Length: 138
Image (spheres, helix red, strand yellow):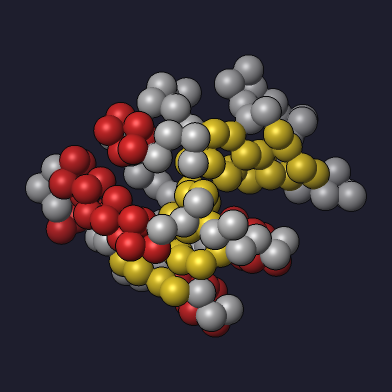
């Protein structure tokens, strides 16, 4: 299996995924200054940047992002702190391959729309939720 991870910032979720041993082959950020890119590069993971501000529309950005994802050809795409709303066309293109990673205090702060899977630390204070992505916003 190969995983592409989309990030926007410091990469704490990415770090957790790398530490867990996921087969991450590519990290893509919409922010050139995202610290998570340094984390990925230090671990020998390919990095790419697709800056959303360079595009005139959300659709144009999503098309460029899809091009980078397709070049990497991952089996799974994890959004780990990726701070962009994706278009329905983008979500449909990667149907059943998109996974949103979200740090939270689950199960303490579980919402009805929350992930079907949560993993908590032995201390019970740090958790991660993972949810597949559909075109509906929650």
